[in-house]
Image (cartoon, rainbow, N blue to C red; front, side, top):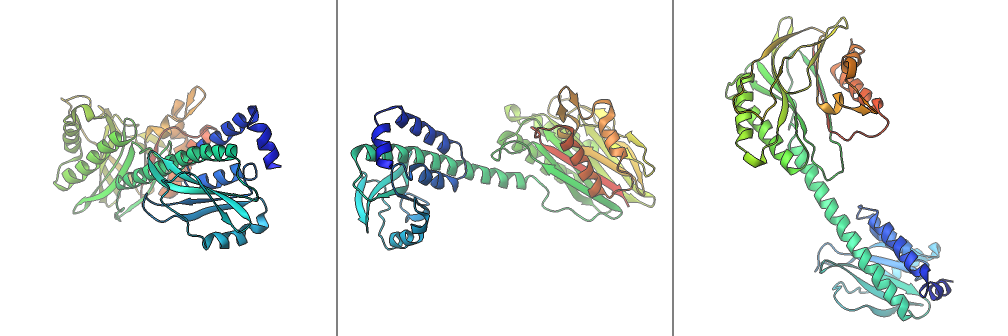
Length: 397
């Protein structure tokens, strides 16, 4: 049946259509483990009775069987044993060759992408491989190798960016007397993007702690560089005894000194001091969405004065607001991934939408408040968010 199909299709439009479909399937995945499975199920049974795909970790490393498929699934285990006994050439640089595995004629097609050998595809069938089948298999092999290499590169980049993203988040979250806190961080976009939102919570000195939540313009390595600069500058200057307003002034200059690499940054930075009645906060909001305080009785109010965002103006003076959280009070700080969540022509924070969400959280723990806000943002629109999201909730015990 496969031979008859090939005889007709190799001389007509079916050939080109099948090749186009195979290309679409291969190009449609960025999962390195899925490509060998797609390759095998593309060629079986159209070109061969079975297909074995081998890959190597580098051009000189040994080949290993990563996927095996047979038109008769009951024969897969037996075929695997036969292939395990076969010495497979991993050089991948020779021309396509043919040999035998028991009752099968076998065609070995090197998988080479960008001048590198990354594996081999072995096809088996009871009869000899016609020239047109060999040519078609070579074409599929080239496309498969490129898809496999692209998927590997994507996976490596995604892993590197996940490691970079983790490095931009706090290494630990300290215990603060009298404070119950909850944080949520969700980067948006593809797996190979580094988000521009960040948060931090750390001990600044005896009896005082600092927190920050910020949003760097854009994503990727450039945004990550500014995120790293901001986070390390905040920690260093806070531990040197600089107040929150002075820290932001210094950080603003540091960002501007980055020159063309600079990105503007919105930031809410605060100092936390436990007091007898709860917590005392000194806050500076540099172009950031306003922080909200939820009283234990359910009243919600904005508690920060809007000031200039960072990385834009040289001559900027910041002033700190003093905010008290009595026992049971909550401070909510978010990035614009929450406030600017869009549904049609409306934003979540239109008409005080965020304050209304927060008003429903009286009596909840800090973690529960953060989760309620996250769920409210997610439910506001049906489509996935295209922006990063960070939420910090501080609650006086």
